[in-house]
Structure formats: C-alpha cells, structure tokens
Image (tube, rainbow, N blue to C red):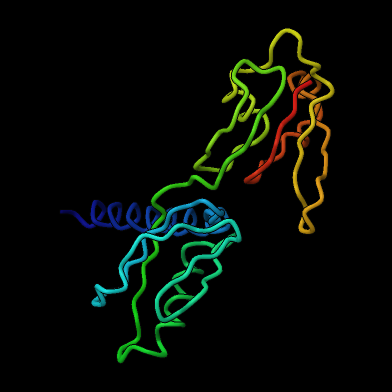
Length: 191
C-alpha cells in the first residue's frame, strides 16, 4: 500500500471514529426513561442467584434482593444499574457488575381520543411528537376540529395541564413549535 493510500485509510478511520463519538454524545440525552409497567431484566455478573426479570410497579419502583426498594420510574437503565450495584456492594466480596436491559415498554404509552381514525392507547418505543401520534391513530376524521386539539399532561403534582395544538396551522407551515414531543401518559384529545 502506498503512503498516500495509507494516509487516506487513516483519515477515513479517524473521521468514522469522530462521527461515532459525536453521534454517541448527541444522543446521550435521548436515553429511554423507565416507566411504571415496564419489564426489566437485571443481570449480575457471576452472581446467578440475583439474575431476574422485574416489573416496575405503579409507584415507579421494584423490589430487589439485598437491595430492597429500587426507584426506577424516570431513570435510565444506567441509573438503575448504579443503584443496584451500590446496594449489592455492601454484601458481595467483589464489586458487582450489573446490567439492566429493557424487555418491554408497556409503561410508555400515549393516548389519542376523539375524531381520529383509530382512537386508543399506543405503546411507543421512541420519542414521538404530536403529528407522529396523530399519524399512528390514522389521522384526523373529516369532522375533527383542527384548531382545537388539546394535549393533556400531568405535572409533578399530578394536576392535569392542557396545551393547545393547532393542526391546521401546522399543516400550513405555521406554529411549528407547537409540535411538541410527547411524554408517557400524555393524552391527545381531538374534538
């Protein structure tokens, strides 16, 4: 291989590594947050008695041997791994190596009601916005009030907060910032 060809291969390799690092850093904030109803698999390396599937309860927690109550709701798999490893470290000779995998996303659901083709509950495995949710529901019917759509979301205190969404303006290229990302439990009402 000539020096020029070797330089080209090295340059391409460097660019690929840089791109992978950039993409990893860019999507780090988009990690999935666990919700009540999700099923997790917990694996503790070299400690078979601790390996199990756990269901995140309605309170966002689950019980784990030797650790007790583990808070999972709103946490990433990495956060849960650290929590379990920290609890097990008090009882195991070697520092525990814990892996948490998501088995099912039954807790990450959005709801679309009213004048859409297929109203109902939709489990989602990625972040989606209002327009994508309406597309999942088959789109609006001919009788839908395009300017009166509401997104209902519970705040930290449990109170219901309504956000206006104007489909008519968005399809005309206006009010683009109203096409917000949905969170687990959000309800879209299309009158």
